[in-house]
Length: 146
Image (cartoon, rainbow, N blue to C red; front, side, top):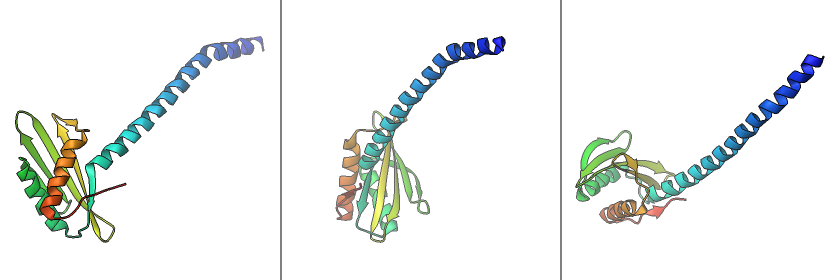
């Protein structure tokens, strides 16, 4: 019995600090996860617009021409997946991938994802420029998505 008591005391004094450290790291990780989730939601709202159209094929063609007008060289276009990727090389390397998918029965959702030197672009300005140009080419207004 005496041996068990020493073992229990040993376990309490030496494992409790480890448990507290682990618990604290979980709390900070959870906070970081929530912050990351909030920033992802904010970024997604910058990257996504809805258009009052159901003509997916026309939207993809217009996305391609808009990207070309903005100086992108189209690397890949997949009508089945509804995605277009292009690269712009002008003193830097900017890659833009745009996906088009239905949203309900009356809209198409267009999402643009830009990477500069393989790093995610979080500045809203390039996305706004793309969606403004796309809206003009379609003669449609881009609606922000909530």
